[in-house]
Amino acid sequence: MRPFLAVLVAVVALSGCSGPVSYEQTWPKSYERTTCAEWQRTMSDEQQFAAAGDLLRAHLKRNGGDERPSLASIQDFAAVLGQGCANHSTSTVAEIGNGIALPD
Image 1 (tube, one colour):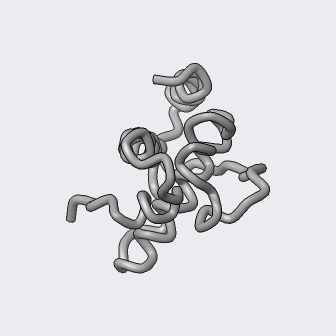
Image 2: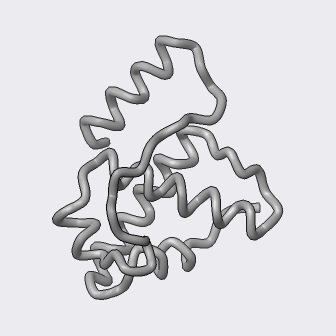
């Protein structure tokens, strides 16, 4: 687990919060124009987490699911997105995110 996410998990666990998390994206490009190489080499942990949350929320909204994913869901999605990007550096983050199959 990345250090930022470990700290975030600890803060959430200590606060007793199990509901949806909030975050602010500071990455300046759209995810449709952000390559996986940028995900791997340029985006900070916080930017990756926010991107995963944004992409997961959009995916859930398109499929009629809860639009406010939990911290664990975002972390899982970010991990799978990172794995996908590791194998497809010229793909965009949005392409990889849209290709992730979510459980029903």
